[in-house]
Image (cartoon, rainbow over all chains, first blue to last red; front, top):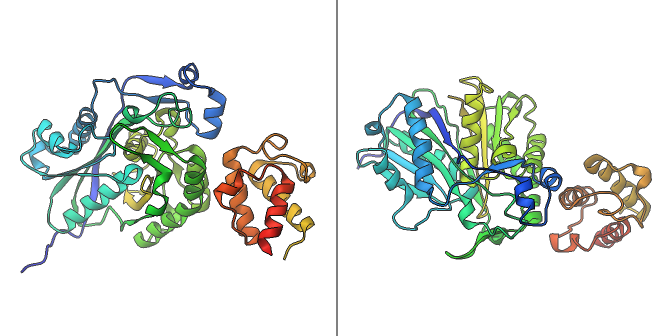
Length: 318
Length: 81
């Protein structure tokens, strides 16, 4: 039997993102639950977030982001032979989101699978895309992080309804002679699984804020450093650091401990809220769109959250 | 093993670094949240720094019982024993 073979590496060719039109401010939430703008800005860092319409689905948002990334890549839908969708908020367990996205975008029977590692989902999916290309199992991959957390939020729970939001971000990944996606560092700790959870199909999202905060501010900088070391990059060489947009104080604590002194640190949480698997590709897509990161420069992605799970890798900015 | 005074001084340094608390304001009867303006998330960072500095474990379930500086100093003092 032959072993799988493929190109020496893969890279992100293009990015795209979609956010719902509706902006929900802290003041609007403080009319429903006992909270206020100052408290939310100080503890979480969110000023406003985007919330989807009731009729707008996870698949709708995934397709919208996917179409933008595809258009920016110069490829056509027929060129995509694998679709990976990271989400923990799919409307249905079956069918999955990725096959529906492929059909809606007019692709020709690509491989299609969903990944549920919650907030680390995009980094896991990007690693899967990289591995699939390097193994010759795919040529051009559409990777999407998408969430509609508003469906799973208890709008009377002030500890969660101020945090979570909706949106989608996407990347087209293709083979390349030079590696543009570094080795992934991934892992999990199921013993802390209850710290972020949706208990059943009718359940609402719950979070043990302090436990998650402690884990995130202590455990993740070493993972980011390890991902840099595996890629052969010193953290001081990073042009940007795009961690999962969980909480501005977690983001800043990890950035400080990482030693990414020359990196632009993504703070998209301020205007987007916490969109779980969608937060990294949305933040990265917007940074590139604004011209904050030069094409070809190294960027560290670091996803972490429900599971608990984490994954990080250095990429070359498209 | 650190004495009570050494633990209190160490806590004052940690509080200054993490939450901008003036070291002179730190005494046993001061409450972290109400007197020193240390919120629940900063408290987690203070606890993690104290664990590293004094070589003790302070689980999340116990953090909520540490209302004052004196509570924390006593907890760390016992934890070292």
